[in-house]
Image 1 (cartoon, rainbow, N blue to C red):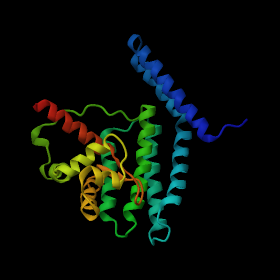
Image 2: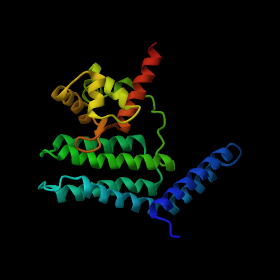
Image 3: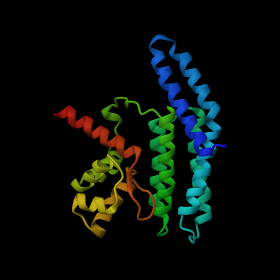
Image 4: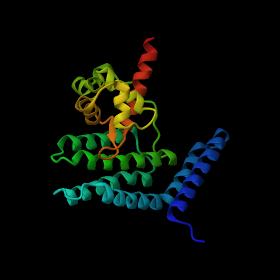
Length: 246
């Protein structure tokens, strides 16, 4: 009996995961550089399969979810596929850093800010959700490792950027409540309304602050909200700061 592509890819993911677990256990008594070389070889053998499946899924999902009668549909579709093709290449190279992820998320946030049509938020949100799925795959393959950030000099902190991208989006109790809640799972508009006590336009105003900051994404128009890697790392940073000041 022929196995489906989905089953085959899932088997490959499990095989890689098993190999990584065994290698990490063996690393305590063997040469780490040699083990990393073996892991990279395994990843390169399966990279094309994973990348092809990612792009095929992206094409299908975007075809189903993007606003069909938008005058920019074809142009945006091509742009989104190119973006996701570029990000999927990190599966082949074997590494994507938090800094790279932050740069990609900033590009997505910039697209949201520049959107001219009513359906832009939904379509860009669909593309962003597909990017988050890629990150999930890269985490499972060991390509994306969220290491501790290096300690930065106070003098290197960009004041305007920090205020605009962190302090302003989170400088509100309800917005911080929403980000904390999303840190544990997806939430619907109704969920966030019950959590914060905000309604309709008032709630949308605060959600927009979080989405424009790149910390939160909407899966699709009127769909659930999810936290991004940037949002989750912001939460972890705040938690660490809070603990250090207690």
